[in-house]
Length: 228
Length: 227
Image 1: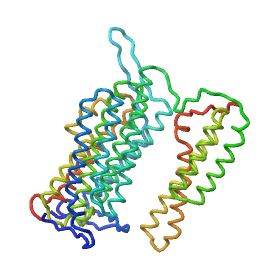
Image 2: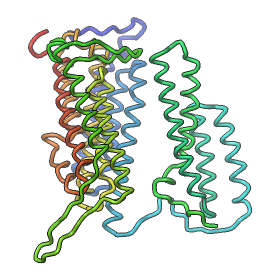
Image 3: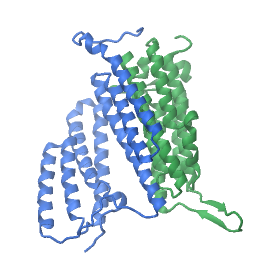
Image 4: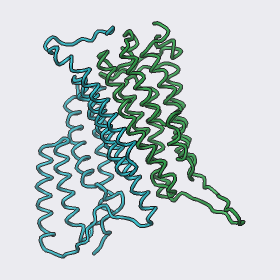
């Protein structure tokens, strides 16, 4: 190859020689996915099969095998997830329009009035949120978000105040801005790295926590508004 | 082919750590144009569509409800900003991410319409856009693998190899699928047949600008007429 790439000597030649097979694997996975889509006439199946093509994309990025490639896989994965969410939303709203009725995101046919639904969710949610805050960052956000989601799902039979949840969505947006500001400080003024680190860590913690907690709740107001 | 030949005049760089933006007159003009269009679209209101009914003298008016209007305006602003970002970025992978963001937002703009045909078309466009991420990211990643960099400022100085040409073809296929131009236009054409026109126009504008910028990037990578 004309352009010589700087490969460190510690990398064994076997690893370097794996690149071309990996590229072919990725393209082959993509082709198999495309073939399957061309045979498939059901829209939902086509959507699921498209995911296989995206997996081929991840293989192509991962084949590079450097630190930078590792950093590039994450945006690739996020883009893939965002697109599949957007398309499935389109599919759902199309089917709803065809059938002329709406479907709940999380169907909850049960409506029971038990004491445990009042006490346990709060306790468990608080434990999860505290543990998440202790972890901070993305992982902590996911754990705390799980706590909030659990709380909402348990309270759904009794009704969640909708105004509060809209406020939570706003806080999530502001926290996201903090995260972005943190990253910008990393680039613009690297000497303030500690401030940037904490902004980014807690920004993403609050954002992910609220986001996970809000899955679908704000979007379609699935919860029963102020039932009591 | 160096940056000044393509871009008119090399005005300087904005170094942000690893990511270095470069400014040429061409770049800057496209960036400004995208921002101006975004501002105009952000201020405008949707028009309502009036359809004559066949066989009678009646007519039907299709309006965009307030909630739908808000969400559409927000998404069109995001789309405009992503286009502006794709115009000015000096990093190949950031460019692909901006193109993907444009693709996702385009689906979002028509997601809430009531016409089943339009939703059908948006679904098909979405499938193509998702398939197109394979050549798009694959092309960018294999350029990274061949040259060891994805900064356009560095790519200008690296001589082209056959594999880079292959990667650029992948990249172009990816951009074509993601922005829904020539071979994939059939999936996107029906998306415009709904009310709420100024917001729909940004779908069109973004793909036009992105294609122009892609050609510049491909010329920077491949240097078809010698350095």
